[in-house]
Length: 331
Image (cartoon, rainbow, N blue to C red):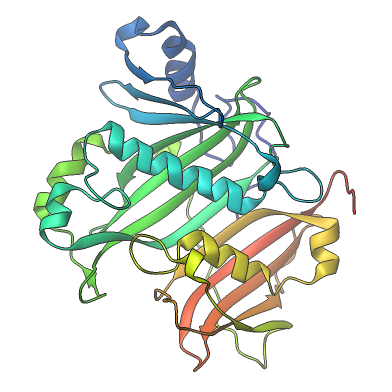
């Protein structure tokens, strides 16, 4: 069953399909606002600049999370003046990196710890999931909160909550499951105990705080089962990140390439899950496949299954997207 895409009452602290709890958000926001009341310690590094990026780390016995503020810019919005899903994922990624910096763990690359550097290890995304209630508009200020948690034997989970900074309205929630890869062999690695000890004290293990993982099976697609195929996609040099492969946000672009324009004009993405099988380098060609889901029982929403393939047919990822009718349409 897919998570509910209905807005959970608009405000923080209402327990609905997004899995938030009254206790957590009451403690994390009302008390933190008074800087330290109720045993909270607030370490702030609020730095206003031309991009209105504000950073703050908050620590408490059971919870350690990080906040970044962003103002939606003109180059981050679509034709309806809404921030794109790629923009949101870039905010989340930036907040995650900023979080590791605030903990004093990052030494190089994306959240690379000292023990990871010793072993030539980097983080790679194995699963990504996002649930949106409303996309922020051009010039709106939003706040991203992130925290990490255990996620199986060999993965760590980075969690995010996006809210309207002025009203506290919950706009979106998301997570990425990350594994370790040896950057020399390009193979996944077991999770060394030395790395685990560096980060496990910062884990938040209260499962009620998390976006529930999509338990649905993602079907395999090919040219006989796909309704739409976009071929000969290629990464640009600007798509390559510091780990020398395509950044995970770029895969969203490729997945959406196979969505018909009639859907893009009248609907907006409200839910996405992606499960990654392989990394993608600069000298590759790939195909994006989409198939209309047969399980389409969510009101007027439209659902698609997805797959990205290399030119030789080797699978890169599988995914699922759900789309709701746009409230307003400037197209």
